[in-house]
Length: 382
Image (tube, rainbow, N blue to C red; front, side, top):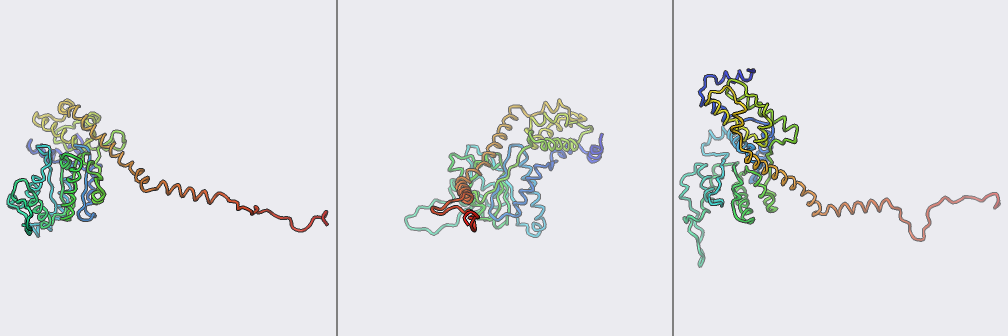
């Protein structure tokens, strides 16, 4: 047993099985890709202007929910003193968007959940301020179940009065559950509008499906920013080394009596996780629970294999990841189309033409070329 395992054993030797399970379940690894994305996101949040919208996208199981929780902890920690002085302040709010039952995103349900998350009272009794009535003008009563402007106004007011600087929306791809491309733009326009009116920064975490929101229109693109939370790539030597390091770190935190030698099976672990650390953590957690329940000293390869994600599921995740990465690469090639649209090719042609004009010597009509004339007379002429 190595030194790290001895230190870990000393900490939890007298713990119950339940405590050991909770210890590993709550354990997160600050692996390199997570740290890079976290640093980039926090920098943008702290330095960006008000009303900005950020989209953090990547494959399922890569660790976006872990990142979301970490950002919330960090913001609450930095604002701890302010919160203690004013209990009404909520500097950050996070919400996991549910998948709609009928296949269509429900904004009214979204407003209710957000208000509930902010401890807003009397959610079911929100009404809009009555506008000044005009003759021959039809008004829709605000209390009808089909309307939600009152809830939206209440949410906007809550964000402003609670001084909420940041709103985190996990599983944001569920916003796409609407029919038609125009409706997709409306979804993003609504988020952008709330962010703009309240001055709060919205951060949306989701899968590669979020790429459907990219560049829907110029105004929206100006106020949004994207961050790619990628997986570990088998074609990258540095990624392989870092993935192995994550496996090693997880093993050192397994509250078991003996080493499990997980690195011997790193290829199998990569195959079924597609390089996504979130999937790896869930897999090892299931294995640990069974090992503790059966009083096993370590996690064996048989235990790993029996609890591995099905090949069909891993294949689906791999397809979504690879296709998403390819679409992202295609988007990066838009630089050429942009240059063509702006006329960079014409500018290059003109520069080449000017260079050609400067290098070619032109002869004016009726003007002889410069030559050295003979000065004086020769002896024969004399």
